[in-house]
Structures are given as structure tokens and as C-alpha cells.
Image (cartoon, rainbow, N blue to C red; front, side, top):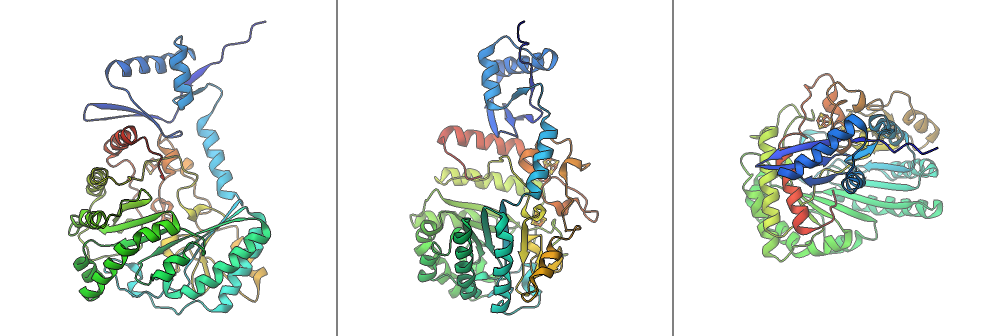
Length: 452
Ligand code: SF4
Ligand code: SF4
């Protein structure tokens, strides 16, 4: 008896993108891209159509190539079902324990676009509360293999001593339970000093994000500080950026832009380049000032629309490439849209409020439990409540996204955008052809590996 020939079909996650006379075949599950212009497109389309009809194709070399890249899959595979199941497993997984901790909501600035500028300022987290969090981690980490902490605020470095104290305790717990540990930090950077830069590595900080607003004059104006102070800070950054990159291995410079300061994003890149900082671990990106995630009702800025911002991002990517910088951000398969949907991920504010949505830390949005330093059983009961915010988020069941062939690289974007009070708008598809065309060229020319 002869064995039946294997049958194949085109992947559900193939997308053909056309821009400026260039055709690209992209698979959102494997993130593979092929330029398929002219005759090449005809041959590949012939193959995919034939597979759809018969499951077979006689050019085995081409077929094997397309299978290896994920553009063709076995007939037996139900990709949608497989990915939906994988998503559910990741959401409920315990392997990684993720905490976003704001050791203070106090900030040394009053950024004109920040929703926290008018929130009541808290003091630095008490040692009692720190001990409560440490105990929470000790109990939770027993079921995990990795602990990831993101230091958030307010400005986390105002509470530097609390960060040092908790980091040491977390590292001790991880060592005793044989867990990996690493931390990340979102900071305005003003409280960095040479000694603190040196300590980032021993604190386990493997990624740091610093936000800027353009040239020092704009920075000073938007953050309500004297120009001299802004200039001193920029000088500090230029002098110490290489040390920060070396200590952490990954630095993101987020330049918050609207229609008024967009031109200054390139000036920031120029400044770093003039100071000889062209490290490939440096990730420049534009920050989109807008209200779409419902954080604030009004910010006094002339904000871009989604499509305008996509165009500006494209121009900025090209500029980074021209200047010899790495361009991060190639859409790749994700495990989750954001940490808010993960069962084992929590935000913790200085008063012990536990929530899910990172930018909402310190507010009552998504807050649903508390750290009770003297009653950890009660804390554990509350965090394991059945009805956890975003706990039932499922882009595979969403009217807006379920049929989307980009699902593996997006997973529905921000869960908040799917809530009733916001009209859903898909920003992922804005300028997608242009974006993928850029990354295809960039990838081909540089043959680099991407951070994502
Ligand atoms: S947000 Fe847009 S790109 Fe993302 S899954 Fe939904 S429809 Fe697709
Ligand atoms: S719910 Fe939206 S705003 Fe909150 S962390 Fe997730 S992506 Fe960000």
C-alpha cells in the first residue's frame, strides 16, 4: 500500500502588500517576507492557487521553500484554532511573573501631555509596603521560571533607595527558587547620576526608556523647567549614553511628538550622532501624543491623526537608516498584545493598589486588588478573583479583529480600544504597505537581526 501524498494549503496568515510598484508576500505568523514582483508573483500565485484547489504542486523545490518560510502549511493544520488555543494558554500561563511597580507617583516634572501631572502626589512607597510586595513575589514566584519587573512612576528614580532595596530582595528570591530575573525602567532620566548609571547592571536593569521632547528649549518649555537645566540634562545624556547602553544592553529614546515639534525628532538623532553615539542597541522611536487609549480627556497639544503619525514614523525610520542607526519595530509574532491581559502580570502603585493596565498605574482604572502587607492571604484571594480586568479579552472572538490576517503580529492591539466607550480604530494597518516595504529593504540591505 502506498502512503498518501502530503497535502498542502496556503497559510491563512499570508498577506500581499503592494506599494510603489513593489509586491511583498508577508506571513504574519512567521514574519517572513518575499519580494514577489512580475513573473515571480505569477509563479508563486500559481503555486498557492494550485495548493488551494488540489493540495499539490509539482515544483517541489518551490513548494519546500514556501513551506520552510511558512507561506504554505499542511492541510491538516487549523492555524486559527491553533493560534487561538496558544493565546489562551499564554494568558493563563504562570511561567513568567511580571510586575510593573511604581515606587512613587511623585514626579520631578510637569510634562504638558502627562495625565499624571495633576494626579495627587504620593510619597515614596513605605518599607512596610515594599515588604508586602516582596512577600507577594515570594509566594507567586514559586510557580514561575522568570520574574520581570518594570520600574514605573511618577518618576521611579525619585525612589531610588526603594528600587535598590526591592531589587536586592527580588534577586535573592530568584536565586533561592532558581528563577531568571531582569528589570526594565521607564524614566525621564533627570535623576540619573554616573553612580546610578553604573548600578543599573547590578540592579538587573536590562532595558531602559528615556523620554525627550525635541531640542532642549522645547524640552524645557514642555516640562516647565529653566532652559539651563534642560541643557545640562541633555549634556549629561550625551556624555553618559554609551555607559547607559553598555550597562543595560538596550536603550529606547522615546521622542514625544505632535504637529509642533515633529521636526525636532531628527534634531535629537543628530545630537546623538554628533556626540559619536551610534550604538546599534539604541532604539529611537516617536511617541504618539494622543488620547486614543482613554487616559485623558484633553491634552493641550496639536496631535497627529493615526494616518499622519504613520507617515511621520515612516519618514523618521528612513532618517534613522540614513544616519546609520538600527531601526527597530518590524512587526513580529507576539505572545500577547500587552501585559494587561496576562493572568500573571500586575501593576502595583505606591499604596499597594494592584491593577492591570500599565499607563493607568496610580489611578483607579483597572485597579482591582491590594497588597495587604499584614494579610497576604487576602491579597492572594483578591488577585485571583474570577473577574479580573481584561481577563476575558479575546481578539479571536472580536468582531473587529477575528478575521484579520495580521492577528499574530497584533493580537487586537490595546484591549482598552475594544471597550464599549471607544469607537474601535485599527492603527496597525495605517501605512502598513509603506512600513513593510521599508523593513524589507532595510532587512535585505543590512542583513541584521531585529530586536522587534
Ligand atoms: S487591531 Fe487591526 S491589525 Fe490588529 S488584529 Fe485588529 S484588525 Fe487586525
Ligand atoms: S490595556 Fe492598552 S493602555 Fe493598558 S497596557 Fe494594555 S495596551 Fe497599554
